[in-house]
Amino acid sequence: MRKKIIAGNWKMNMTPSQAVALCAELKDLVKNDDVDVVYCVPAIDIVPVVNALKGTNVKVGAENMYFEEKGAYTGEISAAMLKDAGVEYVIIGHSERRDYFKEDDALLNKKVKKAIEAGLTPILCCGETLEQREMGITMDWIRMQIKSDLAGVAAADVAKLVIAYEPIWAIGTGKTATTAQAEEVCGGIRACIEEIYDKATADAVRIQYGGSVNAGNAAELFAEKDIDGGLVGGASLKADFGKIVCYNK
Ligand code: 13P
Image (tube, rainbow, N blue to C red; front, side, top):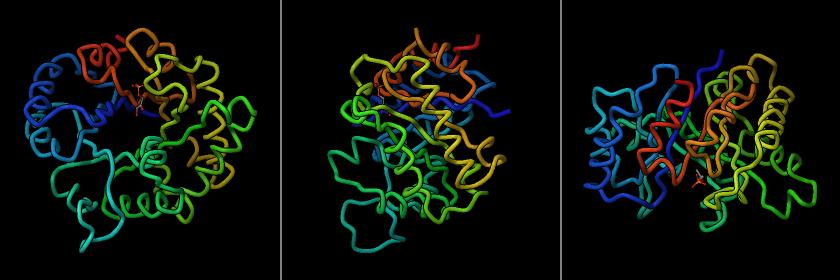
C-alpha cells in the first residue's frame, strides 16, 4: 500500500514572515497521519519554515536545486545546502522551470541523480501542453520525459521517488483534468516505470496529480488507484489546503 503524499508548491509566493504566518495558520488544519504532507517553498523561506514546522507532521521541500556539488554557480543552491537546512524533498522539472527557464531533460536527469545522491526525494514533474493533448501524443511525450529524466537511475531509487503528473493546461487555470484523464496518465506513467524497471518498482513509486487541485475535487482524484496524492499550487496558500490534506476525513 502506497501512502498518499500531498505537497503544496508555493511557487514565488510568501516572504519569509508571510511564510511563518502561513505555517502557523495551517498548523492544526493539516494534521492527517494517513498522508505525508510537504510544503515546497521558495529558497529564502526554507530556514524559517523548517523552524516553524518543528514538531509538526509537515516536511519541507525545495522548488528547485542545481546539480553541481559546489563552486562558482552564482545564484544557485546545491543539494547539500538543502539537505543541511532540513529539506527532505525537492521539486525537479516543474513545467514553469522547463518553460520559463529552459530546463531540458538532460539537465533534469543530472538534478534527479544529484538529489538522490544527497539523500533528498525528488518530486519529478512531467506533463503535456494542450496542443500535445489535442494531437493525441500525451502519453508518448510523458514517456519520453520520464525515460530521459530517469536515465541511469537505479530501481531502488525510483521506488522511493515521487512523480507528479501536471498537465500544463490545467496549471493555475482552474481547469482540472477530469478524474479519468488524470488516472489514465498516472496509470500510464506507472506502466512506463514497470516497462523500464519492474512491477515492484512500479507498485512502489508514488505518482501525484497536479493542476487546479482544490478542496472540492481532491477526494475524487485521490480515490483513483494510480493517483497517490497531489501537488497543489494556488490552493496550498490558504486554509483550503487543510481540506485537501484531510480529503479522507
Ligand atoms: P495550481 O494548483 O495552482 O493549478 O498549480 C499546480 C502546480 O503547478 C503545482 O506544482
